[in-house]
Image 1 (tube, rainbow, N blue to C red):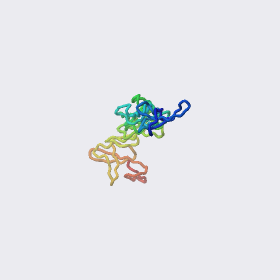
Image 2: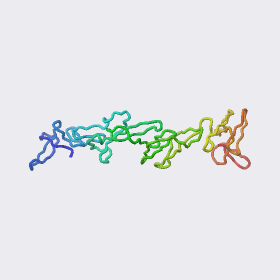
Image 3: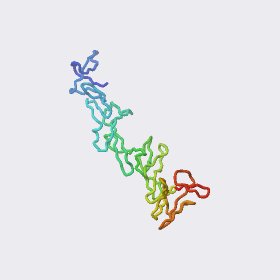
Length: 256
């Protein structure tokens, strides 16, 4: 039911039928004299109305906002949950209000606490792997898309820096595979970062295509460039691809 018993029948005011000594009486709703609506409903325009999501109605004809239960500046979202029904329109107590508080820290761009508003922020720190900062991976799995920790990636080589977060290969996987690139003054050779030529020339240009020159030889054969002040080396590979191509004997190489 959404209405409690009233007192007298006046005009077109809300009415409710009740039993009385074997007879039937039609009684009105008289706000102000006593609570007229059942818990989960409130009095609006002289009518008992669903409390609505994100509110609770304890049965005193008044609707209370879940937002008013916490004034923390991190409070971001509120819900109502009654017997497993999410955003239930018939919450009857403050304990049915669920709050989300949003935070960030040195390892994550975003995470949230979620629990009853009256308990305040705390408990599990929910986030997804995309919320880890560059150079971090989701390191402790909860369920669904949710994790609760980010840890520093370890897959990059020396003289490199990470450019983004680690992306798991499957739901729930815990993998340190952050993308990385070499620091200034270094070039990628396989899974390492090697010093570029320090003789004042770090690249060979041919049209719009460039290839790095290194301070030491990393492939055989290799391009050897003698310049005033030193010797630079260009790596060669037989793998196909776009780049500067060099033919040595009967073999075509690509600078990488």
